[in-house]
Image 1 (cartoon, rainbow, N blue to C red):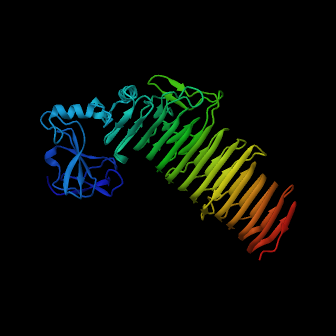
Image 2: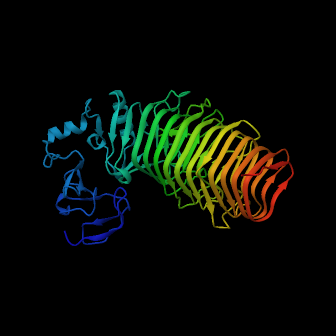
Image 3: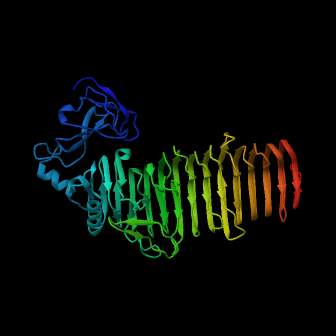
Length: 499
């Protein structure tokens, strides 16, 4: 086999380097699985869970550190080299069959290959239809690059399960067909939450410059877990008029390149919208357009670190987003805002907790609207931009909420203002630090009823606290350091003594 030579890239899953088992250096997809005849499989692997696909066997092997041996991982085998421990007939039955005990369908057993050359979208769509008809199950997609020339639709009680970064999904689209969904669900074109329910996509990588990503539409009870987002046309995940969608484990290396470029979007569909669609191989088909709100959805355990400078990291788009939670994440590299809601659109019950927004033009920008929003919670959030040329606008800006709490939050950077509010009722801020602004640390610009306690304003060129026309701001326990003026009052501002 010759000496091991480092490959030019990374191994499968999230491990370190993979190794080429030949005598020459080979430029490959940095997340590709090692492939070759079984005779070239090395005697031992370099790390736990290293994969080797034996092309003459049709079997993928996994190096198991605990047993110090290669163990069967996937594949249907062949008559000469069956799956270990079975005859070839038994192996074929195993991967084709679905039973109550093991409802697993391996796409390889149905002729669906991830060779990076063959378009398999229609075949995967038909297999998903078959699985739903059988009552649902797990559709396993082994390592490889799968070209989807149409949008496969996932049905009720079905999970599409990959092998981590080694399972790559790409939507091929003709000129003029760019941006249609890579994956969606049955009933995307219905009303209410009448689409497929209890389905999920887990452990896949999206590298699809011509298509949108995963689009739950009019769906409910959806779980998207461990999704790796590389190149994409619009969004890796676009939640449209759906409820009870959980995105748990998401990593983005790029934003969209098609003009609507937030990696994650919460959205809904109304009659005037000509986007949010699937591609059936020849035509674009729009999601149902009845304005169903996106409701009770969660994004958690995520990192958005795009190399192409998208406008936003997370975009809350259009009217009708309710009970959205964004937690335990990191966002960097956005040229407008890390988290943004559209100007003028109503939002109810938005929670942002334990999120770091580092080196973005703005941190959290929640549009301008006089009323109609309610329940905003920002807690344990850090917003910091050291790049003076990048910082713009306000680190946090919100307007139109009735009932909002900002706590345990730091905003640091040469933003115009650190924190800015308009048209807010019953706003409470506590344990908030605002530093570095060109103008004001805390700017209550217009028609804000607020209480500010245990806060710090420092290193700003204008004022520590500004209370504008129509505002009523009570504050106490606020410290000031190196500010142009401590307070500026154009509305009502009152201080109480703290003990």
